Each structure stands twice: as structure tokens, then as C-alpha cells.
Amino acid sequence: MTDATSTRPSTRRPRRAQVRADVLDAAREAFLTHGYATCSVNDIAAEAGFTKGAVYSNFGGKPGLFAEVFQRDFGRATAQLVADLLDGTGLRDRAQLPDVAAGRLADLVIRQAPLQVAVGEFCSLAHSSPEVAETYAAMRADQLDLVADALHRQRLLGDGQDLADHREAAVLLLAVLSSLSLEHRAAPELYPRAVLIAALTRFLAGLLP
Image (cartoon, rainbow, N blue to C red; front, side, top):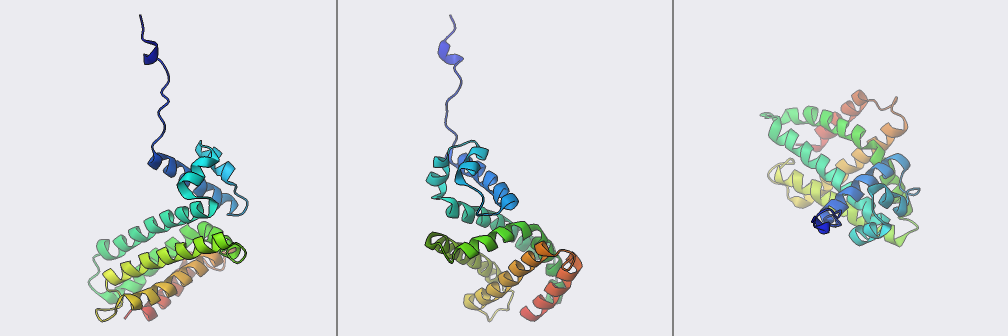
């Protein structure tokens, strides 16, 4: 006699990490395609194969979910960029860094342009929503910390500069990258890769010692 329990479909619940990853993937696609405001928690959860409760229990709501999507994308991109520039290029002459970094940053600007549009929308909503404002501020603070720490660890401004100096550089760098991403997305014919590289080379040459 066959044990009925051996043929019963598994009802094991997915691990929390897998639920989070699936929801983040679905949310990223939705935010990139439709922007922030028009995406609903219900639609994102359904696309990921869960109920909206999975979104709220893991991310606290749509603002928290958007912040996680942004941080995951930005964190990965930044970590890879720093590794490529400072570990993989084998630069012996720091004077070469603006030219090399400008090309990599231009690619990042183009790649991140759709997400930056959603970030701009998210930022505009911060003026009327305290929840979004709080989440946006925390998201940007984490982003600045990440970039400032990376710059400081690599001493890109020189040995005599402390973390506060590198944080100021991070503010400038992120403002430039965000602005260029938005401009490229809106008018790519005016901001092609070559123009982005030229502008970023000039900016980095002035920023770095």
C-alpha cells in the first residue's frame, strides 16, 4: 500500500530570503517600466507570486520596497565600479584615473537612467508625503555613506583628507551622476556616451587631486 503522504504536494513555504528576492525582482521591473506612482503593491506582489502581505511584512510598504530596489541596484553597481576601477585596472599613474573612470561612470549613467527617473518621481512625492520623505532621506543617506566610504578607503582625495571631505566629494559626484542620468533619459541625442565621457572627465579632473 502506497503511503498517501508520499504523493502529497509539498506545502513548504518559501524561505524569507527567497520571498524578498522575488518581490524585489518584480518590483524593479515594475518601477523601471511604469515609474513609481502608478505601480501598486497588489500588482507587484501578484507578479512575484505572493499576496500584498508579503510586501508589507518584508518591506513595510511601497516606499520601503522602492528604497530596497534602489539600494540593491546602486550597491551592486557601485561595488562593481569601485572594484573595476581600483582593483582591476592596475593603474600606476593616478593622472589616468579621470579618463578611465569617466568611461565607466558614463556607462553607469546610461544603465541607471530608467531607475533615476523613478527616483526623481519618488523625490517629488517626498514634498507631500512624510512617509516618502523619511524613506527618501534614509535612502540617500545610505547611498552617500556607501560612496563616501568607498572613496575614503581608496584615498581618492589624497592621504590628508578625512571622511568628511570624501563625503562632500560623494555629494558632488552623486548629484552629477543623477542629473546626467535624467538628462540622458530625456534627451539621449543631446547626451550620448561621448558627451557624457567628456563632461565626466572634466568633472573628475577637477575633483581629484
